[in-house]
Length: 118
Image 1 (cartoon, rainbow, N blue to C red):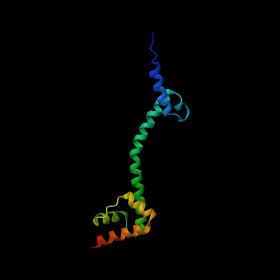
Image 2: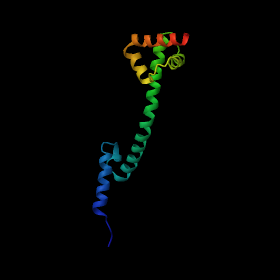
Image 3: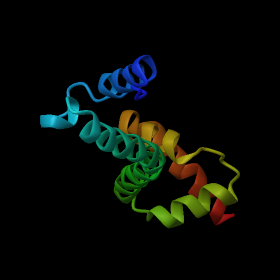
Image 4: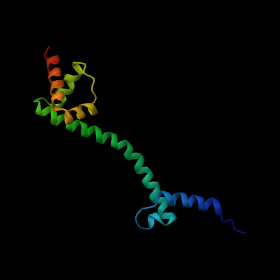
């Protein structure tokens, strides 16, 4: 007599096919292809959650650089000046201020410049 593993196998298959619902071609319908697609998708999701942090930091740096160049100071000199003047703003907040409130960003730059000049 052979063992078909009825319920256990069906539940496992349904779980995988539910996750891969909407995938292109047989990757959403056939268990073997769906299993491979699911494993790859989960692996990439894990990796990309970490890459997302790098990507956003790079974006914030670009925005701060563009705004600081308008104030006639380079990005690296601005960050150095902020550290010396004990202005504790992270790059995310600096980028937000630079994009939405240029006057406030100009004041922050001026404060940093004055602190370094002393």
